[in-house]
Image 1 (cartoon, rainbow, N blue to C red):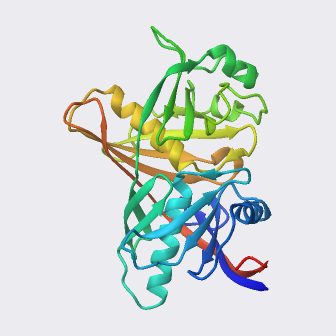
Image 2 (tube, rainbow, N blue to C red):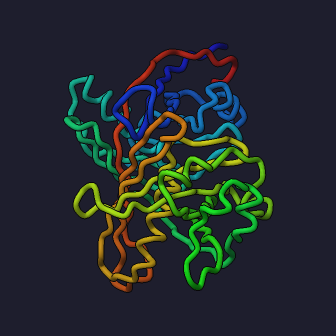
Length: 314
């Protein structure tokens, strides 16, 4: 038996086609079952950094179920698939004459409560989080083994103990590597198959996230950052919302400011010609030691729509 599934591709964290981070969204009706192996094959066929399988609303009130796959594995959460899915649901509802503004998604990491603005096409999602700063750190030596061109570009301050490793949710780890200079340092980051941090099998997704802090605010109240994410297996990612959440949560926690909300704007993908803009708001709880809320937001734009044929999968 052959089943036809509709799909769409969108560019995320941008309002301009062929920039931002591409995402494939495959619609899964309630009567269709896809095995994990089949989802993985479809993700490899699209060959984007992530592919989302968006299930039809079952009416249970837990939201639209989303399964997020890279070309190699399923992820518990990822930022650009979240924003891309929200944009797709919101824009489709608008095309059908509905005014859906509140959207709920259910991913492996938990429930995502979100808002979609039809006039600006901005999706803003309260991200499920379990932020953990690992006790181990990545050494400058390990980073330079992966990125030898950065010998003079690594940012090292007094009392430096290595580069922090932060998980925004269980099953994802990002090595946060600050560089000195926006113009000189970030362009020197190159594709590398040498990991900056060795982990045990089963540790989940691990990737380095290189960033530079701006010395000024281009928008009042927002801290400006530019970044690159280069992972040994998938290459460079134009926009990494989960890494942006890990970085901004780490920076906010370093402030030790109870009850404060910090706002960050992150530009990514510039050096690969797919400029992206990610916004994150992080609220610290009353103790100053934990994250209370993380809001990830951004825009997206529809690129393509079509139908795929699946054999014997119902």
